[in-house]
Image (cartoon, rainbow, N blue to C red):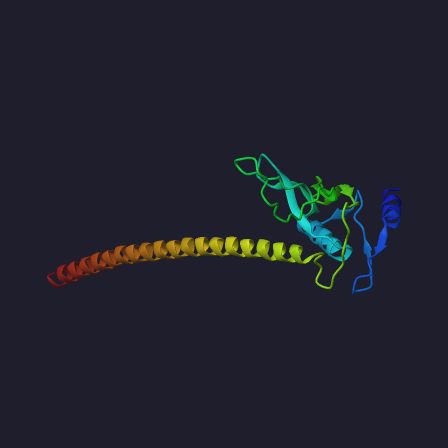
Length: 208
């Protein structure tokens, strides 16, 4: 029965022809959809968003209080929420900066089950703004610039992590080298002591 329900859920999920360059149809997420990992769920939603015509924002996650593992993750449209309006000190309204946020409610929530599978527990499909499918997967030039900025920040973060790990590795190698030299010195002392004992034994043997 569970297998039949799963097949029925897949068949009932909406398939949207996006008119993208690939010309294929896109399987929409649906509640109960399973993935082997959080990363698989994220990649699926990002590809779905690219072909439908919006950009994904990586949003909140819930961690385990025991080991810090991620137990749930929410992804959504990058136009979720609103940017606050800023006013000057004397009450004059400043010229608003362009904002990609329009209060869009489109989102997906995936949770890790006891089986280890990641399951979609919530899916909001509707957007409150036009969806634009382009060849590169970005809906607007501003979205493309924002994505480039996000990737640049992530690259800088990864470079800092790489430098920190490199420093730790060098420190570890220096410690190993120091310990190796110390051990070599101790071995040499033992070898010298053994030679002295052998020399004394030979002297005593020759005087007999």
